[in-house]
Length: 284
Image (cartoon, rainbow, N blue to C red):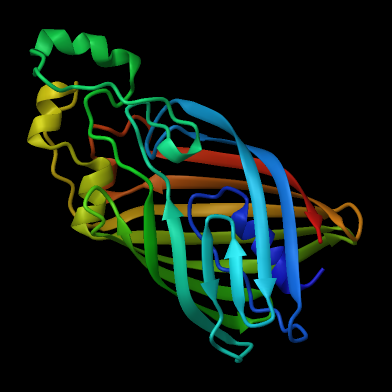
């Protein structure tokens, strides 16, 4: 299995932060594609103590012209240099409703708060929704760029910059990381390790971790203004098991620790969380 297929499947199997697949030289007009289905267990929202289990579709495609789809992201390799990769990147940031679940992946409806503002004693009826009274944030299409640099064939520095998240679509997120690529455990097993940090602007942090004046009046949370800066640090491990030339089992585990202003948000119940997923995929 070539480097692209390994990196693509580790990137797209439900982790919270995007990894772009490696460039894959192919004959003109050709493509590589994997599709599959799995399951993921993750916090209901960043910093939540409760968890949700959901179906996890897998889609990984790369065409010979450099265009790729990797999970909920898509982009294009513009460099022919095997050491330095870069290009434009698009990604979908999931929404968040009052249950803490993303509205685009099966979240339940939002409790309407129009017409009145409950007194503090009335806020108890919101406890059925973890984020009851907080403004819903819809799914957002983000645009930006990625750049990766290979220190050697096994070590890769990664980076991506995406804008467009948050309530007003003005949130910006920079992710920097390092990957240890494709450690061969046995003939049909490959493992990859990764670590990184995320830096966001104030608009991003305030959208997902802040509490506005109106939200504080209609929810159980006090007013809180989140600042920009380091948002989290994360480490992950990825395991691919090649069952046959066409079938693969791909699994991921990632631990994320919220930092700075995000860590201090009243919305945060657990600053450290783990996301795990596994999926079976078929190569076309």
